[in-house]
Image (cartoon, rainbow, N blue to C red; front, side, top):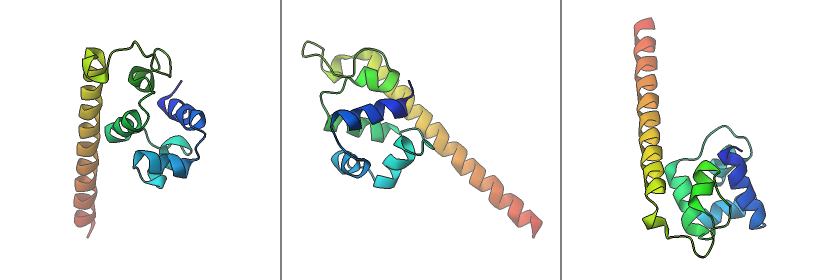
Length: 118
């Protein structure tokens, strides 16, 4: 199951629509729509972090990896004490940084090619 599908499961569980979910997590409606409905983008670290904080019942490991249950059990340790989750979060932050760098490089090369064409 893809992460987009897991986010849609949270939306359904909360009985929300895209707009109300976006407001609940503090993310732009279009951003949520591009991830959940259009599936054009993968969610950023900030997007996922806001979900975990807005809906504390969500099992962060399930959200990130699909492993385990969607609903966090009461006996489960707090987010801060999950070392594997911390490593996943660090990995996602690094991926976001790499993507941003690639976008900047693409823009640079596109501009350079356009300047040479003139």
